[in-house]
Length: 127
Image 1 (cartoon, helix red, strand yellow):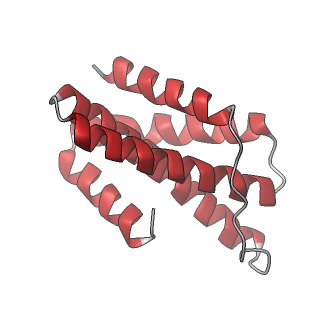
Image 2 (image 1 turned 45 degrees about the vertical axis):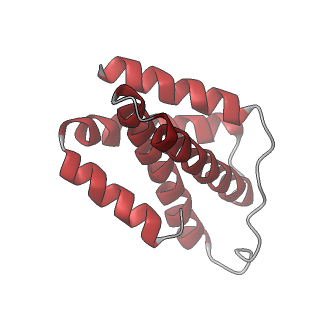
Protein backbone atom coordinates (compact mmCIF):
# COMPACT_ATOMS: atom_id res chain seq x y z
CA UNK A 1 0.00 0.00 0.00
CA UNK A 2 2.85 2.43 0.84
CA UNK A 3 4.44 1.82 -2.55
CA UNK A 4 1.18 2.63 -4.33
CA UNK A 5 0.78 5.90 -2.41
CA UNK A 6 4.40 6.84 -3.05
CA UNK A 7 3.98 6.07 -6.73
CA UNK A 8 0.80 8.16 -6.94
CA UNK A 9 2.51 11.06 -5.20
CA UNK A 10 5.52 10.84 -7.51
CA UNK A 11 3.19 10.71 -10.52
CA UNK A 12 1.49 13.87 -9.28
CA UNK A 13 4.88 15.52 -8.77
CA UNK A 14 5.95 14.57 -12.28
CA UNK A 15 2.81 16.11 -13.77
CA UNK A 16 3.16 19.27 -11.72
CA UNK A 17 6.87 19.63 -12.43
CA UNK A 18 6.06 19.89 -16.12
CA UNK A 19 3.74 22.85 -15.50
CA UNK A 20 4.45 26.46 -14.76
CA UNK A 21 5.54 27.31 -11.25
CA UNK A 22 4.03 30.23 -9.41
CA UNK A 23 6.17 33.13 -8.35
CA UNK A 24 5.78 33.80 -4.66
CA UNK A 25 5.78 37.58 -4.35
CA UNK A 26 6.60 39.41 -1.16
CA UNK A 27 9.37 37.05 -0.13
CA UNK A 28 12.23 38.95 -1.78
CA UNK A 29 13.11 40.71 1.46
CA UNK A 30 13.28 37.50 3.45
CA UNK A 31 16.60 35.85 4.09
CA UNK A 32 17.53 32.49 2.58
CA UNK A 33 17.02 30.62 5.85
CA UNK A 34 13.44 31.83 6.11
CA UNK A 35 12.80 31.01 2.46
CA UNK A 36 14.35 27.57 2.91
CA UNK A 37 12.14 26.90 5.93
CA UNK A 38 9.00 27.90 4.01
CA UNK A 39 10.18 25.87 0.99
CA UNK A 40 10.57 22.73 3.12
CA UNK A 41 7.17 23.31 4.74
CA UNK A 42 5.55 23.62 1.32
CA UNK A 43 7.11 20.31 0.26
CA UNK A 44 5.99 18.70 3.50
CA UNK A 45 2.46 19.97 2.82
CA UNK A 46 2.64 18.57 -0.70
CA UNK A 47 3.51 15.17 0.78
CA UNK A 48 0.84 15.52 3.49
CA UNK A 49 -1.95 16.38 1.07
CA UNK A 50 -0.80 13.72 -1.35
CA UNK A 51 -1.01 11.15 1.42
CA UNK A 52 -4.47 12.39 2.44
CA UNK A 53 -5.52 12.27 -1.22
CA UNK A 54 -4.50 8.62 -1.36
CA UNK A 55 -6.29 7.80 1.88
CA UNK A 56 -9.48 9.52 0.73
CA UNK A 57 -9.36 7.83 -2.65
CA UNK A 58 -8.80 4.43 -1.02
CA UNK A 59 -11.85 5.09 1.17
CA UNK A 60 -13.94 5.95 -1.91
CA UNK A 61 -14.31 9.63 -0.99
CA UNK A 62 -13.56 11.19 -4.36
CA UNK A 63 -14.69 14.68 -3.32
CA UNK A 64 -12.15 14.82 -0.50
CA UNK A 65 -9.51 13.22 -2.70
CA UNK A 66 -10.03 15.98 -5.26
CA UNK A 67 -9.81 18.70 -2.63
CA UNK A 68 -6.58 17.24 -1.24
CA UNK A 69 -5.17 16.97 -4.75
CA UNK A 70 -5.84 20.68 -5.28
CA UNK A 71 -4.11 21.52 -1.99
CA UNK A 72 -1.17 19.31 -2.95
CA UNK A 73 -0.97 21.12 -6.29
CA UNK A 74 -0.94 24.53 -4.56
CA UNK A 75 1.73 23.47 -2.05
CA UNK A 76 3.84 22.12 -4.90
CA UNK A 77 3.52 25.38 -6.82
CA UNK A 78 4.53 27.40 -3.77
CA UNK A 79 7.51 25.11 -3.17
CA UNK A 80 8.53 25.54 -6.81
CA UNK A 81 8.28 29.31 -6.61
CA UNK A 82 10.32 29.40 -3.43
CA UNK A 83 12.84 26.99 -4.92
CA UNK A 84 13.21 29.34 -7.88
CA UNK A 85 13.75 32.26 -5.52
CA UNK A 86 16.47 30.23 -3.82
CA UNK A 87 18.03 29.52 -7.24
CA UNK A 88 17.50 25.77 -6.89
CA UNK A 89 17.58 23.69 -10.03
CA UNK A 90 14.70 21.40 -10.94
CA UNK A 91 16.94 18.44 -10.04
CA UNK A 92 17.61 19.90 -6.60
CA UNK A 93 13.90 20.45 -5.99
CA UNK A 94 13.12 16.87 -7.07
CA UNK A 95 15.82 15.57 -4.69
CA UNK A 96 14.35 17.66 -1.86
CA UNK A 97 10.85 16.32 -2.55
CA UNK A 98 12.22 12.76 -2.57
CA UNK A 99 14.10 13.27 0.71
CA UNK A 100 11.11 14.76 2.53
CA UNK A 101 8.82 12.11 1.05
CA UNK A 102 11.15 9.34 2.23
CA UNK A 103 11.37 10.84 5.71
CA UNK A 104 7.73 11.81 6.24
CA UNK A 105 5.47 9.49 4.28
CA UNK A 106 6.13 6.24 6.19
CA UNK A 107 5.25 7.93 9.47
CA UNK A 108 2.17 9.61 7.95
CA UNK A 109 0.91 6.28 6.63
CA UNK A 110 1.43 4.47 9.94
CA UNK A 111 0.47 7.22 12.39
CA UNK A 112 -2.81 8.96 11.52
CA UNK A 113 -2.46 11.35 14.46
CA UNK A 114 0.87 12.50 13.01
CA UNK A 115 -0.78 12.91 9.60
CA UNK A 116 -3.57 15.04 11.09
CA UNK A 117 -0.99 17.11 12.97
CA UNK A 118 0.92 17.68 9.72
CA UNK A 119 -2.33 18.69 8.00
CA UNK A 120 -3.11 21.16 10.80
CA UNK A 121 0.36 22.70 10.45
CA UNK A 122 -0.18 23.09 6.71
CA UNK A 123 -3.53 24.78 7.22
CA UNK A 124 -2.07 27.05 9.92
CA UNK A 125 0.48 28.24 7.37
CA UNK A 126 -2.17 28.75 4.66
CA UNK A 127 -1.34 25.71 2.57
